[in-house]
Image (cartoon, rainbow, N blue to C red; front, side, top):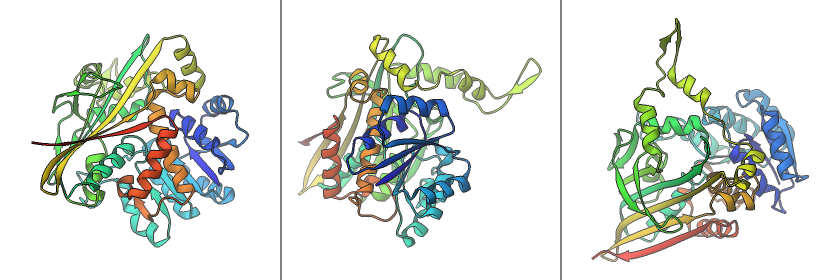
Length: 405
């Protein structure tokens, strides 16, 4: 089996590592325009299965040729969501299955039955018997599968509440997730599902949540622009009244100050006779996500540590009783993640190990659906394959069920 990974960032590093350790994967091609990042990953990985190819994700025709010539079984989109359309078009023309980790276009502002951009391809992909597994990272991805697990056990689903919380300690400013995507999400209105899609302002809905271990402490979270409230109501398999996504970190109010100061504005301002968008300046000044060798040194020196947790709370009814499900994913901290996969952080480990395991399920024919779909559609058998593989790669999925009196 052969896979093409488009994107040699933090996610491409981890996905290529996991795939290279799988006996039934014969070749992985890592594609990017950044030769230095690809070289860094190859030297860190050292698998003979891993090859590199210069890939420009804006060049659809070039990708079509590469995909046809390479006869890949799967293309994994691990680059900026700006290129989703280009990569999906190339996959369709080359007749190769597709997987991505996030979306760029979303409702409100479009068709409620097409809340994320990838779904516009659903009909023609189904007619071509192609598979496109979208939003297949950690959140979205792991969170959707956890929500589905709880929802499937309930007769009625009242609410699904998802939280992402991270604690990062670093001696210097550092970004462990693609900064452009993260900051755009932070500064955008969030969407909740409340018997229909509704917009809420960013940094609202403050809630103090008691996180289970490994955090084991209370932390504040806020509404955050994310995909789960967009797709869960459409794909969870039964009616749900309310879905929300909240995010938090101890430094979140610093990011709010950056947004409030207008540093994420796309509207040009005049500075010394020149017009420039504050967002362009700020993103230019932000450090890129660390390369593999750089992150390894930061962890070894004790200058970086980080810990992430994802929780999903589902309330509903079963056999006339009110039940509360709390599910959470327990993965390694940054130091342990980097030890398991050199160059990985806790965030890239959670996101891209999940993405790699979804990829292996696609490659092995363990995903039964065709067309374009998120992992919310997974049945019990598919979920058990996924949960088992996650545990084998150091991510435990917990489930706690309580009767609400």
